[in-house]
Image (tube, rainbow, N blue to C red; front, side):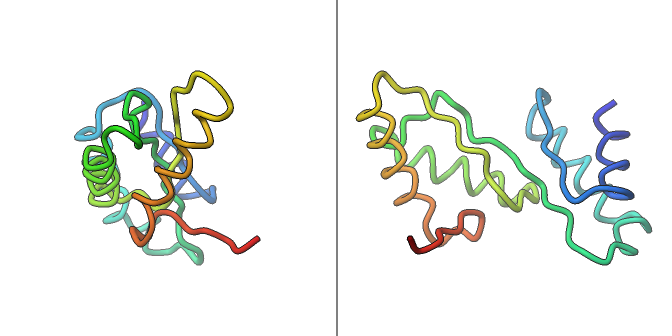
Amino acid sequence: MGAAKLQRAVELGDGWAPQGANHLTFAEMVKRAIQSPAFAARERPLEIIMATPPELDPVQEPRRLADAIAELDTIGATMLNVRLVHRSLAHCLEQFEAYAEVAKGTGLVQFAAP
């Protein structure tokens, strides 16, 4: 199921954004995909986009967020899908700022100058 979608992404796509399974399952799938002949034949890198858990509050739990980002990096993620739970625009912006501060320098998050 998910492995077939990943293989299709390796052969034909630019990226893969898995949904639903646990990170250990994703880690094994990514490991197998990277070792495949189709992956070796790619002319461009495959982006692997994974999400941090939405229940993490980067303001209150920056260490847990840093650990989650490190885990995704270990799995093989090349980009992060940021998910935040917020109560207002101000709260959302506060969380984005805290997320950015934690994520700086991880290699998974790149910030363009305005």
